[in-house]
Length: 443
Image (cartoon, rainbow, N blue to C red):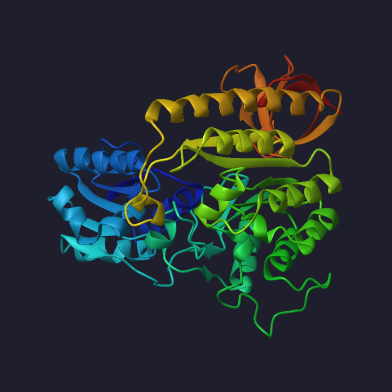
């Protein structure tokens, strides 16, 4: 049967969609070249924000109308439960985010409608990858989340944390490296809590050569030491996990990219406490300072919520000042919207929509200014870049990323042939923009 998978949401969803593709291929199905020729379509959904959920539900509805065998997977299924069939009465099957490994069996049986929520099931298929890999790959190391932030629905839809055994992860990365993968990104809702809820390292595992005692830094050491792996990234992180051992990994292993996505959400201590973030403004800034003391060019990016219930102008200005003090390389700004079942959903959504939009635009403008200033400091430096392909804006230029996850663009020589993705090049920066660096290739 020819199939296609559509994905909405985070990098974890992207990775799980790839795993579903690999499992269906292993079961004898064939990937369709287009939606039109697909007989089976799986939609991977997100429910972090209502709009994302609605997009996935709408897409599934359109596919049902087109007479496709249609499955819905992911976080929206777990949130809705059996009610998903009220929204989509002719949906063939629905699986929660920890049950995607069951999709081939559900399709083989053909007993529709079918519902598998998974709950706290240890997910099957996390290690499945498609054969057609590029030089980059996602690797899931942890599923679920136990942080319980007041605004976040993720713990309810993805369940308690489960850390995969380290030996499984190392074996998976070794196999990827053997297939030409040079850069891996380790995924989890809160990767710095790897090994907290359940042991990730077994007593029979070899000890850490560097004497690392914390589970995640020890995993980074193991993955960075695999031959062929040139870069290791990870996301997403909680500020409480920014330990001295983590900083030591950055110092000792150049393969571990000096970029950390560290969501702050607010610069107001009052709101941080309301959100249940379990750190203060000062503690967050201390974590950033620790990284920048290691390397002033260390790239720190973040997430921020504007318009959280009760956010005053004073709270908002505290967020603005924290963002300037931290000197973020990039920021992702989200306008608060309540999610059913979260603690904050019980609070009045009392910041007007227009005010949320105003604050959003102010922070975006601040980030443009800040990003420009940060990148201008890199003019004249030479960046180590892994090429990704022609620039989307100018086919006469190549594009790639440096270790700080910054987009770097450079002119291709007139007599230059195709540049294989993953080729390591050195680029001298000549020009800076808020989110892009432009330069010239050097020998």
